Image 1 (cartoon, rainbow, N blue to C red):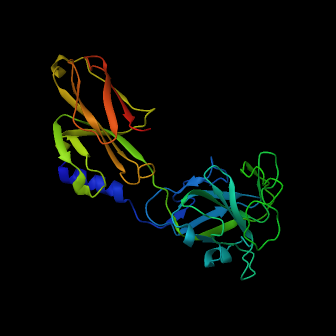
Image 2: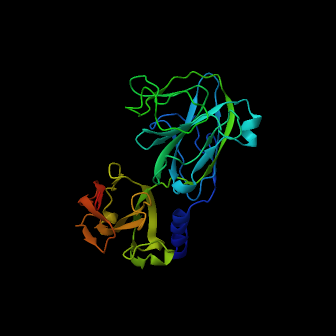
Image 3: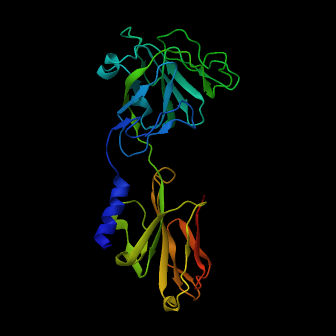
Length: 321
C-alpha cells in the first residue's frame, strides 16, 4: 500500500459518509427495540435529519440511539408526508438519556391537532447521547415495577416523567397496548449520527516513520512507524480481543522482521484528538523483540518472543482508560 493510499484510507475513516438518513432495515439490518440494549445505534458521521422505519401492528416500539449536538435547536416530529400516508395514524415520541431514564414525552401535536407527534426541546438541557423511541398510541414506557413513567394525559403537552413510575424513570419494558402499525418517518433537527470508535492492529515487514498530521486530524504525535508499502495485514482489535498468529516451524523464517502498531480512531471519547497511534514493536522471528518509536495515547508490547512453531502474541493499552 502506498503512502498516498494509506493516507486516503485514513482520511475516509476520519471524515466518513455524510448521509443524513437512517433506515431501520437498510441501515440497522433488523427490528429496532425500545430499550437501551435493543435500540439501534445510529452510527455514522455528520448531521442526522431523518429516521425511517416500520412498526408491526399489535404493540411495537422502535428506539434509536442518537447524538443531540445542539439542544437549543432539537426537534423530532412524525408530521410528514410518509407517516401521514401510512397506516400509523397516532404516534408517540419518547426521549430517554443514555441510561434509559426518561427525559420528555409527547403524544399529539399541540398546534395542528393531529394525532401525530411533534417534540421540541423544552427539557433537553445538554448535548449528548440519547435514545429516541417512537410507538403507537397507547404503547407506553414502564419501569421495572411495571409502573408507567408518564401519565397518558394531557395528550398534547410535552412533559417530563409524571406518572406512577416517575420516581424510578428508567424504562425496562413497554405495555404493548397498541394496534398501530405501518411505516413512519421521524424528521430531526439538532441531531447527528453517533460516531463509532475503530481500532486496528497493523502488521508489516518494514520499519517506517511517517507523520500523519498532513491528514488534518488533530494531534501532533501521530506517526506511522511501519513502512506502508510493506503492510500486509489490518485487523480489528479491542482491549479484550486481539488475534494471536501462528509462526510456521520453518527455519527460513529465522530473522524475518514483523513490525506491529496499533491505530485507533475514537472521536467519541477523544473529540479533540480522535486519532491515536501506539509505539511499535519489531519482532524478528526466533529472536528477541523490541519496542521503539513515540506514541500518542497507546502502548504496545509483545507478550512473548515469536519463536518457530510458536505464536505472535501482542498486547496493548490505551493511556488514561
